[in-house]
Image (cartoon, rainbow, N blue to C red; front, side):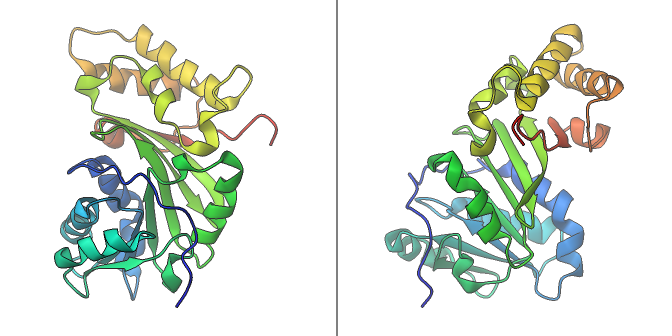
Length: 255
């Protein structure tokens, strides 16, 4: 048996908490899953209840392909045992595992609200381990109800993009994203760092685009302004309308 690598998380979870990132996974990784001989997705650290893994399987089966398989991994054997009544093999299973992925070779790994509980200097090693077999990793964090979220896409141990996502009707100001940045960035939101400059630019654009036509139109105008200012946006209006904004990974000043 492969020894799980990692630590037990707090386990907080809620239904629909990860709906935003699930929809992004279907969009960003759908082509990879459709082309795969074995369309396996791992939900790493699903928490005290398996609801988000169950939802992930259902969303991907509807949006991508009916035979997609999801394996939920948890280090805590009590959580694994509690989840097993919800399993539907071979399309939905629950096993004990951590960053080593229980020896599986998934196409995609979703790890949400996991690395936030680790030290920053442990993040890169975890990224590398989870992507060592070629999986695309979607790693990030969100608030308790999933209304504010950020995540990065990691390939071959390297972060490629950063996504900011919000329920726009609840977004008072983009500064809110600072509280939910991935662990690799959250301590670098200070003057002189690229992430600080990005969030400042998003906030400035939001303030400049006040409109009586509601938060969705304001967000769309904010994204257009950022694009016109030359920020490295890698998505377009179809994603902006969902309350998303994806940019090339902002890195860190010392890199």
